[in-house]
Structures are given as C-alpha cells and as structure tokens.
Length: 369
Image (cartoon, rainbow, N blue to C red; front, side, top):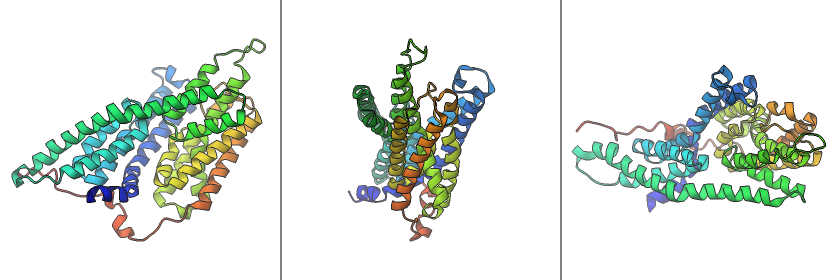
C-alpha cells in the first residue's frame, strides 16, 4: 500500500517523465503532418504516391505513437526497465481500440504499478533476470491488456459516443450553448477522438445542400468552423503563454511552445499536449481559450466547408478575418488565465528531480546468471 501511495504522490513527476519523451514524437509527427497538408491540401491523403501524401502519412504515424510512448515512459518512471514493454504494448493497444492518449496515460500508470509490485517477489539470484525480462513484463502486459480491452477502452469510447450524441441532440436553438459544448468537446482531449467524433458529425451535416445556393446549409458551415476553431486555439494558447511569460515554464516546455505555434497554424491540436499534460492550469487555459474562441466564431457568424483547422481552412472560410479574430481572442483568453494562475517552476530539489526519472539505471535486464 505504501508503494501505491508513493506512485500517486509522485504522479506529476511520472507524467512529466512521459512528456519528456513524448515531446519529440509530437513535434516531428505534427510537423510532417502539417507539411503534408501545406503542400498537398486538405485531401492530401487521397493523392496516394505523392510526396505530400508521404509526408502526411509519416506525420500521422508519429502522432499515432503517442499513446504507446506516453504509456511506456510513465510506466518506466514508476517501475524502471521491466515496465517499458508492457507500457508500449498496452499503450499501443489503447490507440488501436480508440481509447487514445487518455488510454495511454492510464495504461502507463497501471502497468507501472503492476510491475512495481511484481518486482517485490523474492526469488533466488539466478532467477532474478528471468523474472525481470520474462515473467514480470508478461504478467503486467496481460493484466494491462485485459483492463484496457474489457474496461478502460470501452469506457473511453462510450464517453466519446455520449459526447457525440450530446452534440447531435443540442440542436441549433441555442447557438451559444452549442458553441460552449463544441469548445469543450473539441479541446478536452486535445485533438484526439473527442474532436474527431465531433468533426465527423459536422462533416455529415455538410452533405445537406441549400437549393438556393448549391452549397452546404449555412448552419452546417458555421458548426464546422466552430469545431475547427476549438481544435486550433489550444496550441496557440500554449505558444503565446510560453512567449509572453517564459519564466513560468521550463526550458523544455518553452521549446515545445515554439513548436506548438507551427503546429497550430496547420490545425495540429496535439501540439498542446506536452504543455497541457505537464500542468493542469495550462490544460484548463487551453479549454477556456478554445471555448471563448468557439463562441466568438458562433457570434461572428462565419462558416466553412473545409474540415481542417488552421491556415488550410482559409480556402473554404466565408469570413477569414472573423475566423482569425475568433482564434486570437480565444488564444489571448486562455493565455490570460494561465498567466494569472501559473507560477514559475520550483527549483527546490532540482538536482534530485532533473532527469532523474528518465535516466534511471537498473540491473533488471542483467543476463549474468
């Protein structure tokens, strides 16, 4: 019980360990995806064999690794090397069953705790290596996979389905309320399945054509742009916050903030994940900014026929200036919240914490029998 309490007491430290490894994956994946869209357009994936499609596929491959990477290194931070394999496997399983990033975090915590307890088993010295490289990872992987497949994955997918039904059931009688819902749903998981499920609903609505104009009905265009706004504000909030008040972020977070600016320009919401996961105040600021920006988009009355946020959306937007203004207002609002609530990172015990959880050395894989 003492070990379990210790894990949750140091949970933030374990999450930061995962984030430190996640940042390059998010940055590279996002940049490649953004370049693919920039050169190949918003239907780049349809141009099979083209170089932009290659870049897009490369980027999506990187982004799809996020649950596995975050799961593996959270588990590693908790229980060292024997937890890496289970974290990777169960984290990737979370991606495959659409539990996504949140599922990866849960996978890392669970596998790390299981391995931590299994390592307490006393065996003869000659069998310690076998225990650490075969028995412990196998048991932790199996238990984690059972949890993910039969409990966590279904719960997360059910949550996404419920949120999707909520959006469909709200109707259009209260556009402000709808804007609030779109802002929350589109930003709470920072670009993963919640925003994608929401976008799918509005994309389906775009198939309803107005006979007078031959274009999708305006309400569908407005909802689509609102969804795109909710997706694009979060990385701008992170980038603007790191630029305006760099002292409240670590050097690594400031670098991630710079990368988030580029990712936001091409609608890659995942650029906000490294900073948002590291501090709940930043995460809250991302949601607040997205909600404010989305409501502004609704109020301004702009719409779009392009199901992609950021610069690529300009081609199908009915009012580019209104769209940009809504994003700017949302980004400033979220940034203001972060600046007002977040404090500079503590330097206390820095020598103990700095990279300690990502540079652990152990003898669990020692093959000296």
